[in-house]
Length: 271
Image (cartoon, rainbow, N blue to C red; front, side, top):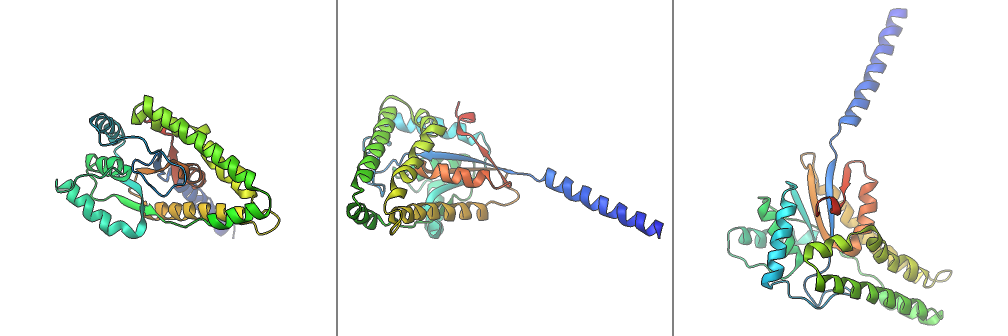
């Protein structure tokens, strides 16, 4: 009996050691989150830049410099803000681009995403977006009914100041410098606060229209997160995500709390 007990104890200990070793040695996927401004206008955002020519020789040279640096990561996937269901059409355009039969549009999805994918010799650019509309009309009506229009006014003031700041950064700096600036922790928090500091309060205690609208924004980002995680496999050591800056604080939080991933800070790559 003692012999059997000893063998059982040994096997249990071996199982614990093996399991622990497996957990410790599991390869995490590094993921670089790049929050961008939208290059094309008009876009779907309520507040956006409308001032630059990203097809100019100056900006094209800057995009070459940016993607040359990013290509040094040896990323195995590049993910962009394009609906998941558009993967097939995106594949077609990307393949035409690889063979020299397609001229990139002004969109950052192509100017950064496609350009970078080609330099990384990737066969595909991954589409991971999922759109959920926000109930802006109900938020506006609720704010009016509850004497909360001041919240929408403050939201607009905050958003316009942020966009003006980004605009000034773009006027005086390169695309790389702008990306470094808008991906700083305080700038990511600044964007997220638009939803949490102002919108979420509207209708609180009654119909919660503001909170429900913010939940739509979180739902969209949760769906994007789900698409990211399902498109990464065990062979992906490094992934780059290129999305509008407003998405990054939520996606960053979600990915930082998934131990399959290691979030890479942009300022450690763009120096």
